[in-house]
Image (cartoon, rainbow, N blue to C red; front, side, top):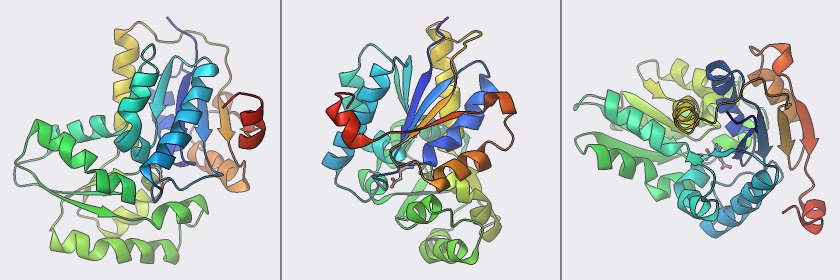
Amino acid sequence: MDNRPIGFFDSGLGGLTSIPYLMEALPEEKVIYFGDTARTPYGSKAVTTVRRFSTEIADFLVKSNVKMIVIACNTVSATCLDDLRARFPEIPVVGVIAPAAEKVAETCNSDSRVGIIGTKVTIASHAYRSHIEEIRNDLRISEAACPAFVPLIEEGIIKNEIMDMTIRYYMDDFVKKNELDTLVLGCTHYPLIKENITRIYPGLSVVNPSSEVVGRICDILKEKDMLAHESDFTNVFYASDLSENFINMIDHIFENVSEDKKVKFMNFDLEKERLNGLL
Ligand code: DGL
């Protein structure tokens, strides 16, 4: 048993999309979430910058005594997973890409046409393709970067025509030309526009890494005998810019989670905490 919280982080609010699945699967677990809303998006930045930001956040989570780090961000999982595992050999560090890639490899037929969408950094890394092809190489895989999705989602521009037009702009040709039947939402922000995508492309079967990663978390905690039991810790959600959008999005994401799972919000001042030695 281990009642310490699980640390989650993302460039912004995208990683929050995993939390309801975790709470459903393992209701006793508590989380510390860090959304780097002051510096989002990561997915169009240089990998060295993404590595610096994610190391700072992971250091903070480890100082906060988390029992596991979940990189709830495809961009960071694609580029920094090995670095973070090497930096913290004493705790499990879990990325979102491998569990979803394994799901694709397990569930698709040999005539499936799989599309991966994600940020520029994730798509340039070919991390999904490589993971899937390590398991099997008979699937037809296509990849597309959709860099405008994250800024719109962070702004809360979701249920409207601007988002639908942006989806069509990036995906119409991609879906049609490649005759896709399966789509991997290779960015943790994208489950927030899953309804738009399935409405516009109803034939697509969607793989959601934000939910797939929860199976991996459960397996590791069970295997290492680290499940929480009657933890009195409160779920804490840090944002480096605690905007109204971040709070609204938590309300939106947690609409099905009972009140007692509700949360404490903390603004995390990057500069101040750097001076305090927390980063
Ligand atoms: N949600 C993130 C991901 O899964 C980051 C997106 C971004 O900041 O560009 O890649």
